[in-house]
Amino acid sequence: MKLTYILPVLVLLINVACKGQQQTNQKPPNIVWIVSEDNSKHYLKLFDKNGIETPNIEALAEHGVQFNRVFSNAPVCSVARSTIISGCYAPRTGAQFHRRSELVPMPDSLRMFPAYLRDAGYYTVNNSKEDYNFKKSDQVWNESSAKGTWKNRQQDQPFFYVHNIGTTHESRLHFPESDIIDAPTTANVNEYTVQPNHPNTKLFRYTNARYRDRIKEMDGELGEVVKALEADGQLENTFIFYYGDHGGVLPGSKGYLYETGLHVPMVVRVPENYKNMIDLKIGSQTDRFVSFIDLAPTVLNLAGVQVPKQIDGKPVFGNGVDTKKIDGEDVAYGYADRFDEKYDMVRSVRKGKYKYIRSYNPFNFDGLMNNYRYKQAAYREWKEMYEDGKLNGVESSFFKSRTPEMLFDVENDPYETTNLAADPNFISSLEEMRDLLNEWVTGMPDLSFYPEFYLVENAFDNPVQFGRTHKKNIQNYIKTANLMLQDPATVQADLKKQLRSTDPWQRYWALIVCSSFGEKINVLTPAIKEIAENDEQGINRVRAAEYLGLIKAVDPTTVMIEALYSAKHETEALLILNSIVLLNSHDYGYNFDIDENKINSAFRTEKSEVLRRIEFLNSEL
Image (cartoon, rainbow, N blue to C red):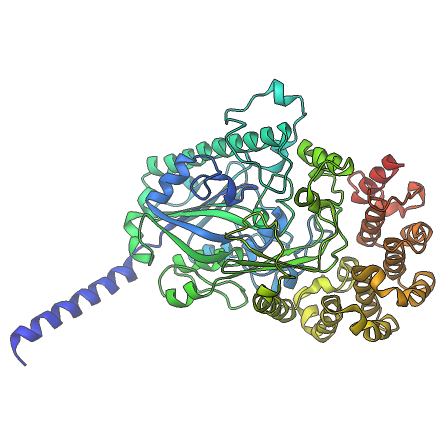
């Protein structure tokens, strides 16, 4: 072979070897997360034209990558953060309820992911919010407090630092209506468009501007963290992630599986000394889908730590990532169960531009009373305007029962106001999304097909193992729940059979399906009356009475109140009260005179969510 051919080959081999040696010997990068509470992407101008400018976040994007398709798997703090810290879907692990009634163990000997970083020599710091639904070992953080800092590490020790900013938290919008005059906003109240499902009132315009003021303030606090890293000489050694911990907090976002509750902003600043570790161009944007289950494995991958096989997520960038495969996986899942005292069960899947939402209790309308939500004046005004008949159809939908399936084109309908599920032009998309979601809830399996109080008693010692053992049962409950997607006349015989099942949770789901059909299934009313009077499970008597109340066949109050008085578990009482609050609402109008002293004394604690529900109901009398 001629020398002219050999020399270029040798040079290439030497360069490849040197680069490999450099990567092998390179010190692991620092990784910093700056997390803002309750921010969806819709309110930052970097991501949406209706947002406010955030110069510090924008500066991160100029030196990194803007991720346009990042999704929290849950629209509320503890469930979202439990998903992040474990890298696992919460309905699989028993961490799906906010606030938790009981802490659950991490699944299958998995540890919270910062523990693996500590094993690899990282100094791990959380400043300072945790809010996990899992039991936490002492090996997760070197520091976790409001004073936590990377500066306490050993010299040259790499660090993982989480900085939480509460400036945009929902509580910051709990202001009196008099603030419209007494506390003017910096942001122009007429500059931002009120989203189409909200009434365009003075209060909503002010709330929009005030929220953007908080986002601007948050951006300044983020900038201070970046300055501190630069002053410490660590800026170009550190990957800086900025993201929102879930959506919110304008009405109908936090706590709901709409895009405003799940679709969050994320920017990753890439340090000069480690730009070889990421396949994406500095200063670029990407539509690569990222879910919160992916954050832990991505950090572990950047740190050179093996990702545990028990984690549901995957690294979305860094060394060894198959970028072509990642870019082709444009799917994200979401879940909503109990938030404080309010129960629901909703699942979602986003694929490309389509969003599918499956409501397993579709008669539970979105605006059902939740005390913490309604501390916000805009929520209260919205509800009052509905009850006074002052809203249009789109604005009223928050207070109306949902359809079991909803399909949205979120690129053309970002606030999910036009349900395409019944449109024959979208039947193939609907069926594809339905199949995706069914495969997901079945495969986990999704523990929420059992009531929470049953899980607390029977599953929370080892939720994942319980799911494996009862996977066949859960598949059967899913099959029953999906009867509500068919024609009621077609499934009538199957429902009648399930109402007579010896399995109480088959009866439970058959009753829920009947309530979703309402009067279309009234031929089964006699069988449901029998359950309301005689079922051994109090919650099934309540579900039967709920159906009878929804169709206004029988006054459900006596059955429901008696079941409440005999409830043995706090979450059982809460689930019963959810049905009571539904039937007490404006469109149904049943009155429930509840004697607080007859409630199990164990539920009557100072911060009891049961008492919160009863106080609300008594105030409605």
